[in-house]
Image (tube, rainbow, N blue to C red; front, side):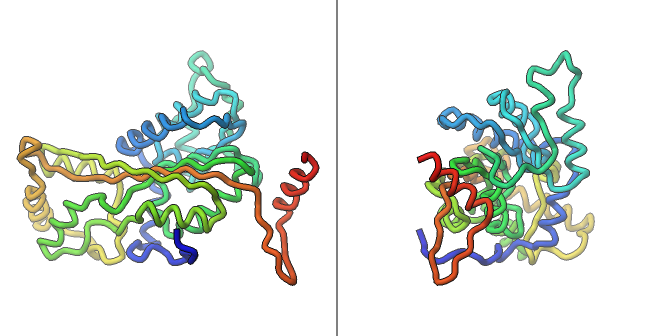
Length: 301
């Protein structure tokens, strides 16, 4: 891994559009995000640490069905839901409420407040990193929330995502269909520079197929937005919509019975928060939380 910290912002991502999408009030969690969350939740069987307190980061877009699955896996753990806006938090609260006779885990173990720094044993963040305008700052925030030996589980989209759609846009002379997604090795570098240890990165490619351009466009409105800095400015008209639908026919693949085909690359990441390392200089500063952690470790040895 590189020794040079990655401090630059995603070069092709529009931060204004990113912030707007982060507070989007989904009617329901996007199905693709739910599927990715299901696959990520299955990986928890290999994690021996049983969290007593964990954070679900932005579950409205990350997947409310899988929020319930993770809570069921750790029924004795307190879950803190951290959403990107009060409106989204209210929608999540309404969605997870159930009559007492349908609850099979305690409602008292669910909170919508921010836990104390260094108190969470797990932070679960599904499909959030690839749309944030400052991923390094977000990773550092997650690091601060975790306790020593706590772990981060996350997923995001990788650079092969929608490669076919970008080729179609390029053939039409249009701006890119989406911003550039970060490679998993670069995510590993950023995890280390944010203070995490032992990052484990993995990826898989999913193939999405559609029977018509109309079905494809309808589904993608729920899955996301084009956050590229140089996307089309303003609204497109009906004429362009017809051009787009015709252009999308280029996605048809004979091996998929003529269905329109798109690739989605999904990256999965796991990393631990280690004991803080003190950088000794002529004048060193230590945060109060790190000092408490270090003192507690010394007293236990």
